[in-house]
Image 1 (cartoon, each protein chain N blue to C red):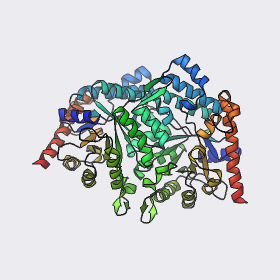
Image 2 (cartoon, helix red, strand yellow):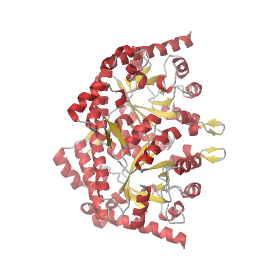
Image 3 (cartoon, rainbow over the protein chains, first blue to last red):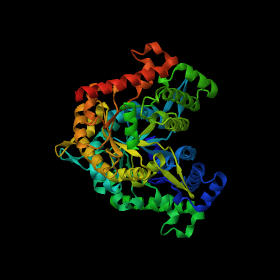
Image 4 (cartoon, helix red, strand yellow):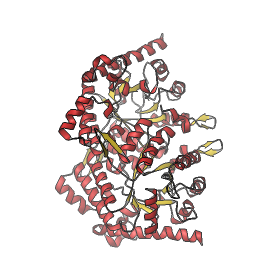
Length: 310
Length: 310
């Protein structure tokens, strides 16, 4: 799957994924009106609104992008109906040929991680059958519990040729509270980064491992260090745009081959129509605004890469 | 909710919760046969088997116990139908008066944690309505991303009078890989424990905070240290039984008031009928075996507490 992701990145020249993290305040009123008319002001109505919204964005951008990253929390907030919308979104994005990175940040003791791995990336044994649950292509996971909580995910990645992005240095302001604490003179995130590189060695695609890392765009210096520490690790970079990460900061997350990082933007793309510079689209053309924002982001990253290369 | 949990612990004299973590290998064959006959060998069939199994255990034990702790991974492995079984289990346990600790180990950047918090403990705004999603009473969360990933959960706990258990020192063998690393001479789990106590100060019940910690039964020495560091923090103690934790080790997790810890057992109770000493029950009476195992565990803990007090 890492090979497929890289191939799609090269074809589209878009080193980015679209974060499908809808909250109702991003969903244009006309969509909410319609779905509430059909389902009432219920979790089902909200979930249908979110799904319609996502579908519009996928339809308007799928030819330009390699991947989408739905954040499952934004669906879990609407309970079971929300998770149905998550599943529909995963299915539809895959139908459109996109790689799906499920941002689920799971992680638990071994036997429990195995259940998450099976449910999200693998197949569960039911009687004589092996059945897939959510079937994303990649998922994000949390390393706090250590190797035996990570290994079951890696085992399933091997079997299914799927991938992981493991939290290493996260994009949020207080990520340093534990992640930056020094252990034998080096911050925790470096120890985690080294482990991520270790874990990935055994599960290599053509040039990069199936096992990637999450490093926030908001921490370019740390990104630079981690890039060197994990040369064969693909880095998923959240925090571009709304969280403050800029194109020029991103160059450090890439290798000299012009690969090695995929930058996520959520609000900046899916709610572009509510933002400066995209007013002309209006809520009825929200998906066209998202398309324009994808193009701008693609070019911003390409420019940063060209600048570094030149 | 922490007050309710403590009241129920005192009424039942059971410092324990039953981990409703079903995998199909724990579910007696007759139940699987029936549900596969009705739904086929499908995710729906597996989910229905899991739900029937849980219902049997709740019916056989609810008068003896304060709480159940369903591990959501065991349901997510069966995709959406599995999560329907999770929801039914939460609903049914609450109907029976039990406190429900959703073992979900979520945690993300602020806005995303807020969505998880709303979906599991709070209410989400949908048009003019505020609707509850999974509505557990407590959930577990992961602290790796720091305060701004934890605070949205605490905010919802304040609003809804619900609670958290925050991973501090987990029960799995490789939990030490990051959690035991020394930072300024003290292991990471102590720094996390101190933060948990801090976070909890603002959200106090009568004697204990709404904000608890997870500390594995498999690490009694660390439990002893953390108990002192977090005097008003309720500790959720996984790892009893199948993972190797013993009754005598548990005394250290309690305060002198005989409170302060709730011990979880999953396999040891829900799959008791498959274990030594419970053979006489057989798969058809699996729920009675669970009841007997609850009584044995309750008494094991009470004995350990009495021994320490005497």
